[in-house]
Length: 345
Image (tube, rainbow, N blue to C red; front, side, top):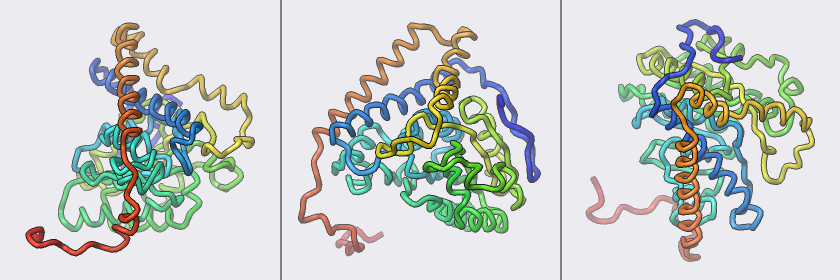
């Protein structure tokens, strides 16, 4: 599969093919490399106990986050899953704030209280990070309903995995979004295994876009390993949703190269299958296309790698120099704080 397939549930089919702009192509490549190198360093830090708790890496799935989020406006909202480092970085959360959060420091985007699964940033309308499978779906519908009632022409992009399709929240959210004609772009990152169960062992119908279409939501299957195909499909869907076309659904067929989490022994997949999917790694796939078209040179790639490496090093240094929350503040934010004099609007 090289791009978006025929649309289901009505609506126009997204256009396929690369955008062809030099700076933009390099931008997409750099964004994916930022996510990849950030997560590779996270794995190292986790092995040294500098990052604790659960850690879910989306190495291999970078094209989904970058391709979709690059089509959004600053006013749009993003709701992600517990595998959300890439979404957060692509949305504009600084690598410093993300790394500090993973290390549990106050300087993190959630003051060190959320960790890997709960990155949050109101300034970029990035509403998590959600540790509950499918838990972000009703949140996205609520955000879209609020925007719709206020007459704001914005889109809520909701990311979730194939495992969430088995949850009741998926069906409730799809039904309400379609019934109320809400501006939601549902982005299913189908990596075929959810947490650790093959799709055909958990779903009687493995065509997930067909499930979405049953709610009369325009739906497409997209090659989630091709950032240009993802971007083209997402741009068409976002434009239609923003124009009042109601919810749309993209099934991004992708694959994670690492296990479900750092605790996962990954015994449910054939190693040969993993290696086969690595032949479609979205980063070298784009780099090869840009090189073949004369857009990217070896010097460009070396420069990008250097810039990304320096950014990761800086983020690690920032996080390690950060501070843990004071003990006396541990109960802060459990309940709302009183408005101080002069702060009321």
